[in-house]
Structures are given as structure tokens and as C-alpha cells.
Length: 98
Image (cartoon, rainbow, N blue to C red; front, side, top):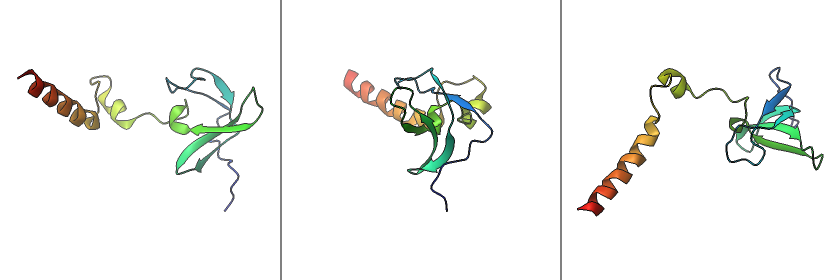
């Protein structure tokens, strides 16, 4: 088994899409894509330090679309797993109001 990441899926660059990452919106040449640290990651050269860095694939434009959001087609703002915590929060506030 090789430890060298090399699966680029034909992509040549990517954009960081995570809204809170300091490089959000910036595009980089893709060196490689591989599973590392338990998740799919992209590897690129940091333009300032010239060192190879990696990010979770999910934080980039290469991430596959969220299947729930595709099926919902804009008809919902919350996923099923978001509703439980929201419901609990609302119940807690209801108790405080009474």
C-alpha cells in the first residue's frame, strides 16, 4: 500500500469553500487527493510557505453535494439531524418562559 496521495479524479484545482477557513474562496492547484487521518483529503502547496498542506475534501469545491440537499432541492433549510437539537433548544426555552 502506498502512502503517497495521488488520486486526483481528473481535477486540476480546487477552491476552499469552508466559510470559516481563512483561505475560503481561494483556489489552489491540486497536488493529490487521498484518504488520510480517517477522511478524504486534498493536498496542495501553500503559496506562502511552499510546504505541502492538506484539507478535508468536504471543505472544498471537490466535495460531492450533500445528498439530502440535492433531494430537498431548496425546499428545506434543516436536515433531519438538525431538527432534534433545534427541538430540544425550543423545549428548553419554553420551560424557561413558564
